[in-house]
Image: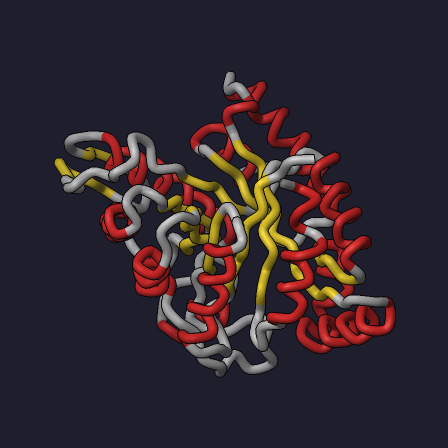
Length: 311
C-alpha cells in the first residue's frame, strides 16, 4: 500500500537544534517531504507566549540543511505578507533547495496573532477573497515575465519576479477544508491540496467535494494530489499508548475532543491501520505532525514499525 509520508515539524517551543535533528531523521530515513507551519505565536497554548520561529527564515534554513526531501509550508498565511513578497521568498527558497520547494497557501485563522501584531483581521469571506487573489498573483509571478493584476485587495503593474523558480512548475498547495470556497480554489488553481487533522471519514467527505468542484471547473481531479496532516502519539504497547493519549489531551486541552479524529494515537499496528483508512479515503500523502516537546522515541517507533508498511 504505497503512500507518500511526510514529516510536519512545528517550529515552536523548541530549539533550532531540535528542528535540525528532526530534519536529519527525515532526510536519513526516507520521508518524502518535510514541512513547517506559519505562525508567530505557539498554538495550541493557553497564552501563546512560547518561542516560535518565523516560517520564511526557517524554510530557508531547512533548504540549506537538507539535500533530498521536498520542502513544504502548510501554510503561509496570506494575511501576513503581500503575495509578491511571498512569491519572491518562495523562488529564493526554491533556488536554495535546488528545486525542492512547494508553497502552501491559506486564508489565516489565528485571530490573536493578527490582533497582537496590528494586522487587520477581516471577516472570513474577505480573508478568502485575499487568498484567491494571492494564489493567482503568485502563480503569475512564478511563470509570467511580468504580472499585471487588479483586484479588490491587490494591484500589480508590470511586476517582475526574477529569477524564476528552478522547477518548471513550482507546486502550489491550497490548504484547508472549506467546502464553498477553499475546495473550489483547490480545484481551480491548486496543484495539491492539504487539510489538517481530519478523521478518515471527514477526509473522504472533503475529497468527494473537491472532486465535485473539479467537475464544475472542468478540471481533471487526478491532477490534484490529496493530503492530510495527522498528529503522532505513538506507544510501543497499550500501556504506553494510554500515556500518549493523556499527553495529547493535555497538549490540546479543550480542542482535544474535536481534533482526536485526526491523530495517530495508539500502538504501531493501530497507527498502520489508521493510515490505511486515510488511503482508502483517497489520501495520497500523509504528514506526521511533530509538536514540541518532540517525542523522538515515538518517531523512531513510527520509522521502524509503521512507515515500512507504506513503502
